[in-house]
Image 1 (cartoon, helix red, strand yellow):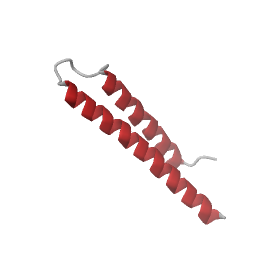
Image 2 (tube, helix red, strand yellow):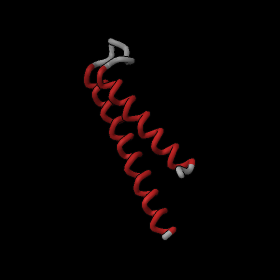
Image 3 (cartoon, one colour):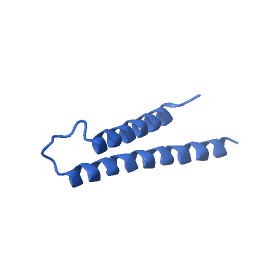
Image 4 (cartoon, one colour):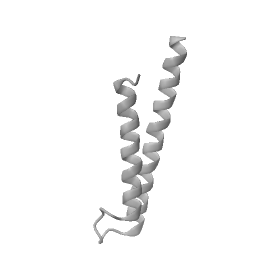
Length: 68
């Protein structure tokens, strides 16, 4: 069973990675923004999502180890 913190962690990770990819492709960014800004913002969002996913995994595995 998934608790609320894991659900929030995984959901926010997916949202951030998806938002990063969308920004990288320039779908919701104004056309007057320089390409470098779009790339930097998209990469930061995607990496932040990956970081969120990894930290949620680590916290989940620590919790399972404590229960055993």
